[in-house]
Amino acid sequence: MGLFSKLKNALSKTKQVLKMNPRDWFRAGEILDDDALERFESRLIQTDMGVAATTEIIDELRQKHGGRKVDIDEIWSTVQNRLKLLLRGEGDIQYDVNDPLSPINRAESGTTVILVSGVNGVGKTTSIAKLANFIQKNGHKVVLAAGDTFRAAAVEQLTLWSERLGCEIVKKASGADPAAVAYAGCERAVETGADFLVVDTAGRLQTQKNLMDELGKIARVTAKVIPGAPHESLLVLDATTGQNGLSQAQNFSSAVGSTGIVLSKLDGTAKGGVVVAIRQKMGIPVKYVGVGEQIDDLELFDPDSFVDALFEG
Image (cartoon, rainbow, N blue to C red; front, side, top):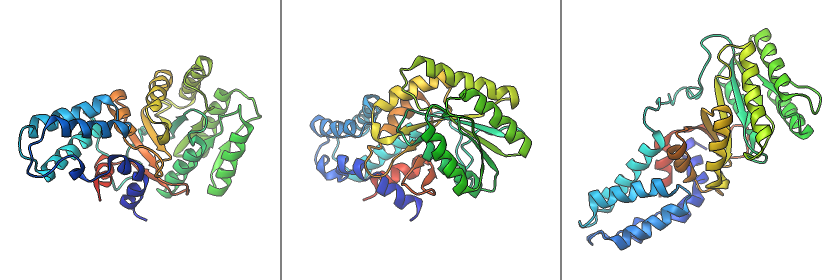
């Protein structure tokens, strides 16, 4: 199944919420009035894209098409173009669709360190495995560091994934200092000449200050071994969490300076509009999306493909 088909399936719930037939709101030949815009506004809010983004879309529709006879194709084009702009963000570097690793900030030389964080249950460990597979498929050597030492099951799960993928993993006894695991992972990555080190961190709630402070410590110790590390700090968000994802993004970003988001569980049960809300409110780009349960179901996030899939019949 190609990326576009995967995205269409992944966005099925959002499409259902919107009932993507523009004739539900906009009747060709009639005057576009506030009643039609209010009905559409209500549907947009239900996709979890947030009030601010919804308001921008409605305001643009009112400005460009309000009081005029409805041209459904023109209206739909306006909505799609505005969503693409909202998702792309000002000043974003355009990803190279032919280079799936282009969104990752890279070290100038040596090992690139990727720190991965997120609350328990978002699919963080599985996302790390998918990312490691993604890296290896693109011809690079990767080492994993099992920094979620508070949960033995997390270390075991990541170990199992490393065995399946055939990549090295650095781990310590249950309850060990996560920063020490990250430090050892950096040393091993340098020693073996790995291109990437992916560091797992303990799942936590964004309200647990001591654990959030620990994230900052992990980030600092990696820089002691590899200058500039972590080069990338990815936050895994569960696409089914909706607007709560904004709270997660804000708090994690404060603790560790998130540089990008991996949106997990975009599998047809999620409201994909939350991507828009996060991008607009936080200024943090979505870099990858998990579009299924298989190890290969991680895709580079492309705003144009995302919006086109959302509006495809």
